[in-house]
Structures are given as C-alpha cells and as structure tokens.
Image (cartoon, rainbow, N blue to C red; front, side, top):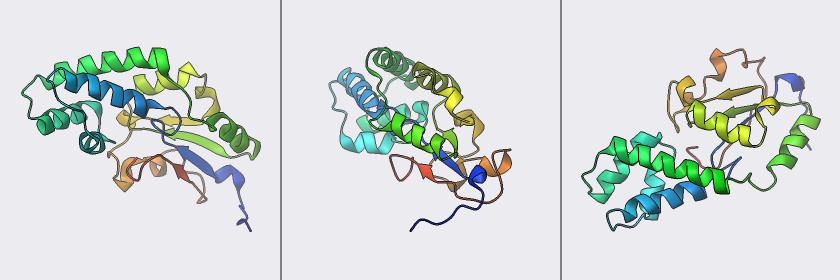
Length: 178
C-alpha cells in the first residue's frame, strides 16, 4: 500500500537534469573523446567517473591532470563547451519516459522542480529546447546553490519559498552523487 499524503500541494518531485531528463551524458562523453584525442589520449571510464557531477571548468582541470597534459584549462573548457553546444543542437534527446512521467506527476497534482549543477544559461537552453520551463515551479541552477554534489546542502530548498510544510520531496537523479 502507498502512504497517504496529507498535503499533496506540499509534496514536490525534484529532478536532476543532465542524464535524467536529457541524454546529455552521451554528448559529454563524445566531447571527452574529442578533447582527449587532441593529445592522442583516451577518454577512459575512470576519467569520466571522476569528472561526473563537477562544474565544467573543474572537470576539465581534473581531466587534464589525469591525462598529464599541460594545457590552458580555460581554453580547453571553452572549446569543449563549443563542441557540446554543437552536439546539443544536433543530437539532444529527452530520456525515454520523461514526458509521460511529467504528465503523471502533473495529473497527481504534485509540484515539480529542477535542481541541476549546470549553469543557468545551459539549463535554460536545454529545458527551452523542449518547452519545459512552464512545467516546473522552479529551476535551481549551479549559481543558486551553496554546495556542489554530492553535498547534502546542494539544494537550497529549505531557504526558499519552495520549502512548503514538511512533506515528501523525492529527488530523482541518475547517479548517487547527482
């Protein structure tokens, strides 16, 4: 049996964005392979896992360190962002079942929130590609959160008007650390 919700309006479902709502992981891996190929190196699963959940510029610094490559991390980051946006325009897809899940959550009268470690401009672009911003009560982005994943304080929900009376607030993500 399902636990009864005393106040459905207080319940909110919080969605991570990259890898859960959109298949961005495939695009990021493609970018990783392209960047590493510049130095004749391989973008390994170890590097990919180490970079997951980090801000883009931090991830590039870590990747260059792991590769043992001495390069201008800022320029590599900017180049990788250009590559990523080219792939977004050509290949971005919603994850299977996302639209149906959103419809079901809306039918149940639950609130929906996006909490992502992506910057505002990227979140707005990805969500806007599929006309999703109106479907969410709030979109929390990297600039709005005091901590990075996997820190439990990553979400500022308790300090915002979204902090309705205590109630269920499941967080849907694609990784343990976001």
